Image 1 (cartoon, rainbow, N blue to C red):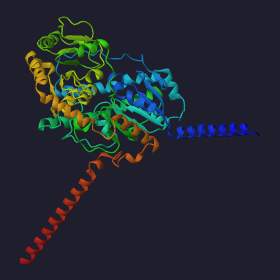
Image 2 (cartoon, helix red, strand yellow; image 1 turned 45 degrees about the horizontal axis):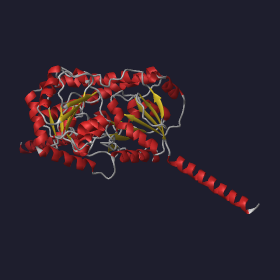
Image 3 (tube, one colour; image 1 turned 120 degrees about the vertical axis):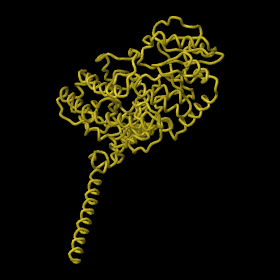
Image 4 (cartoon, rainbow, N blue to C red; image 1 turned 180 degrees about the vertical axis):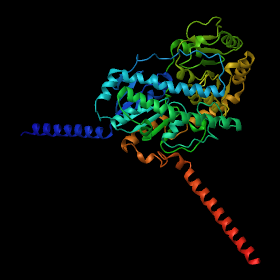
Length: 517
């Protein structure tokens, strides 16, 4: 062997060794992750989109089941788009106010119906084929825990740990699966619409809402989900038991906004996880904002409500107010708008995150949705909210508690009130100062929400489900958790002691009487 051949052989050996080590290293830190998101709301998808993309960028193998694309060339996507109609920009504005009892009943009915909506994913051929295979190639299931637990059947089928996502605040049934205490006296129900400081009436209603939701979920929704699984997959399973094996919940909140509370280790707050660095605005919008000498008001009522269904007389109130202002207005609106003023630009869709990041934006008029609220908080933009449904009232009241927001009552709008509140929020520096302070605290974390989510996801994978994060209260019978058995024993002991004392005293009294005689 000559010198050249020797060096070629050495180089080949080094090259092969490097390839081998790279493969070995990659296999040790690369997981096969299944992500199941059957909910059809776009805002939910926007919350976990950057998280899923980031996991793929970290080298993990991801397979997704969703109505929406994750816009990544290396993610294996099983699309269920077309299995059911999507509802983005289709929900009408309501013309009727529901009372508290009606809200509770309506929400429970709506949540119950969602299981029957999301079961369409089991009709999709690629999903049916996946579930028919006895594949154990997945290391982790990631899914949203929202209105039903149908996706948990994948964890049961493939015998893998689960990470749950909560795109809103933590719902009662999500708290239950990791034995998180409810704190009903200090933490408002996500769908209750109360602020953190509740009076007696609000605490009473808050307790009623959480208790009714939790009871209905345990007794009705889970049994319905179990029946759906049995009907579609011929699998007899208790999804409640599967849920109790949850490794982690990533919840889209931040304690400074939604209230400080003790959390079990299996709950990680990642509020703002969806916020990416801002991008350059489209030319027409950027020109409109840059040329606004007195600043911009951004008006958007979210991805579900259709602007055209906003009652004409209420729309006209805002147009009248805007015509009196020096500021320009960007308004998300589908279709034409009669009577539009010269300082208003309408578009059916706008890059909200990038607009709110522009320093010329002075006010955000919103419905109080969590993603938009979080983006405004992140950028230090004051919010004037007009909540319509869901968690919107709770979100905006949380920001109001910090001084960075105000609220309008959609059902009782008055033009003077709209004008006065907008004018005050534009001219009184306290709103901007409070919003800036909230932004500063919101951003001040040891790692970003996205980095935190990825770290804890890989932690669960590394530690095979991380069962040590679960408290002893998970799966504990309710009578033990609430110490009913202990209190009963204490009561029995006290009653027994009272009886013994009474019996002893009675005997002594009788003996005393006998001795006197």
